[in-house]
Amino acid sequence: MNIVVQPKSFDAATGTLIIGPNRFDCTLGRAGVAVEKTEGDGKTPIGTYPLRQLLYRADRLQKPETGLPVSILAPDTGWCEDPAHPDYNLQIRLPHPSVHDKMTRDDNLYDLTVIIGYNDSPPVPGRGSAIFLHLARPDFSPTAGCVGLRQEDLLFVLKLCDSSSYITILPPAA
Image (cartoon, rainbow, N blue to C red; front, side):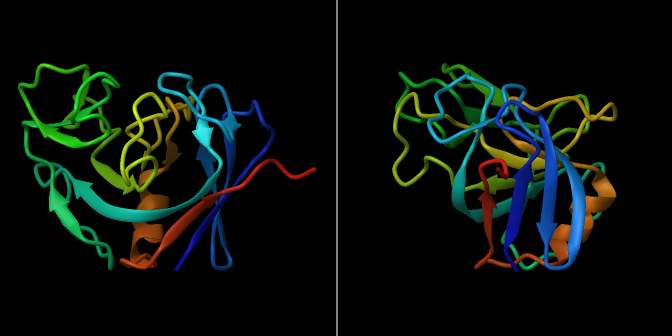
């Protein structure tokens, strides 16, 4: 089943995630949404993208029910965010010489992380990296450009997704 994200406005960091008849509050990038995304701009990219894979913390959660491909997040899992590095916007093993994000964080943000197929076929340096559907912070504060959901909502959404699922991030309604 496909997912639609409707932001409240171009610069709003919140919106509504819709899957079938179900609607959930979600967090977005701290700078809202944009058609043209660049690395570090804090924007969530408008467009339609495949859901590639679910990564999860097996030390914190049971394997979620989903039709997506699933992998366990290992302690040395990272994501390259360095536009100058050949591994840009790819999952990496740590330690790594690039600017990167550690996927096994102290908080629970990435305990459930769906890799969104944004700028990955092939990655274009500087166009943005590490765009995920992941857990929202407890205070529902903005993401760096990802889509965030409460844990119970993301677990529900995952049950409806499979390897043919897409996410569409819409421009704000007029």
